[in-house]
Amino acid sequence: MIKRKWSILFLLGLSFASVCQAGGDIDALYSRIAQKDIQALNELKALAKDNNAQALAELGFIYEYGVSVSVDIPQAIKYYEQACDLDGDYGCFNAAYFYEYGIGTQKDITQAKTLAKQLREKINLSNINLDKKVSERIIGSVYSNKLEAYRDLSFRPHFIQGLSFYFYAPQSDERKLLSRIGFDSSHLARIAILWAREGDPEVAY
Image (cartoon, rainbow, N blue to C red; front, side, top):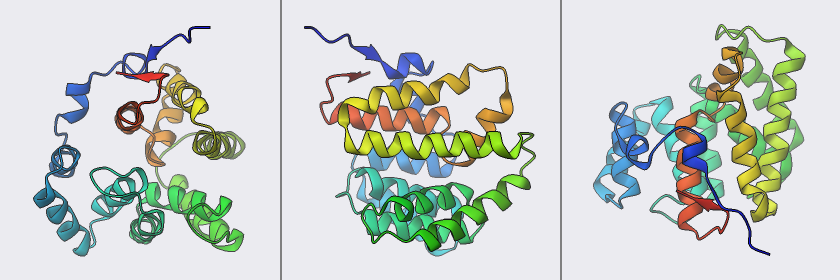
């Protein structure tokens, strides 16, 4: 049976070039890091040392997915937590995820709840007009689906496809929520590219 291949980037309405174009200094640094530019990684770390929440969250992503570095989940968690403490809600979500399921660290439900509380407080202040139950349902779905994609590589396309649905939905607040927790279309495209480069037969760009 021949598996049907589909392009995640096409699904997201993006191209590889659009992902690599700099939308800001940190996006530009990420693009260089993805091309194995060590100097760019050092520059990003320098920004992180200056308590730049976006830089810290970006480093968390880089070490979580192994972007031109070895995958290092404990290091990723460290950066995500620091970003969370500096009002980086993206960091709160990702750090809580690892503690919730004990991935790359000891399972710590108390810490996961603490980070989740910080995340909820930040979302409440970010002009996202969604019912609390709807927000929690979306976040819970992302948690469980990300875990499934981690455990089962064949689930990866479904994970991306499920999230991309929200970018076509008329409710813009749902897209805002996904963006706040680190799953805007740009980050989804980045993940798709990384998975495709790993040779996933169902993920192509």
